Image (tube, rainbow, N blue to C red; front, top):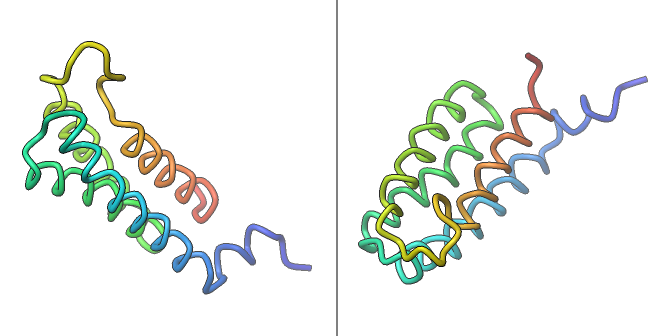
Amino acid sequence: MIHPLEQLRHSAWTPMTVAGAGFVLAVVGWPVTAAVYGVDPALAMVVTVGHSVAAVLAVRWPWAGLSLAIPAAAATMLVTTAAPATLPWPWPVTSLIAHCLTLAVLAVCHRW
């Protein structure tokens, strides 16, 4: 009998679901980072898309996804340092969710 995580790891739905979630997080996170945190829109796009692409990369290549997620998290923290004190610094919520998505993909789809 095949273990359920093995089925999930080899399912065609896994990369499509992660790609869809990454797309939604990029589309929502980009304007949130730019408008709420006052980050330049081009820079907000780069850091937000970096987080989202890390989750998609992690489905197939775990080290590539992890290698992109860490600098994307650091870059997000750096660009949001000028945010007002009332905001949940250092990460916008969408970036935190994208980082958690990457970690969940790494935990479920790959062996350590």
